[in-house]
Length: 160
Image (cartoon, rainbow, N blue to C red; front, side):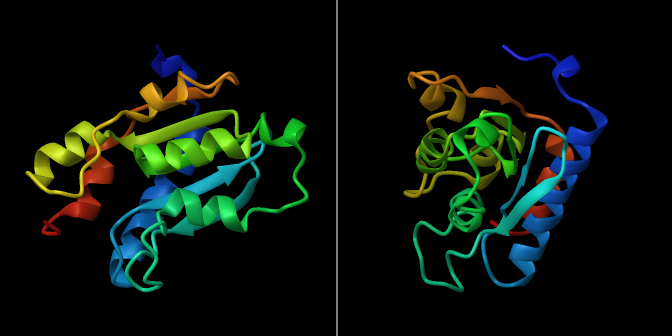
């Protein structure tokens, strides 16, 4: 289990950037999700927004878009020290993509449980926590979250 001491001010800044990207995605006509990838020193390597609607891509979640666009020259040694920041807890598909990418740490803002509670019943819910998905991998991925949930929720005001 994680503790607030696991989250630095730099982490919070990157989470806030992911949240800003979620607002941008919504303004572009997509679902409000954003993601940022940073290296061990905190330098941003990539960022992305959800593009499911505008790109007509059911896999166009912010995390998968980000992982597809990241530098293909990043070594496994570099990726294991990277952190992916997400405005909302990654779904099982995105958690799997994070695992397969080699990224070593995930920090997310809004929990999927809280998102589903405000969304209400929908056939497009797969309530399986990213922590649960990632704990089954043979390579560790540290999961930190939720953090800044109230800030992340603002992107969904009036959305559902």
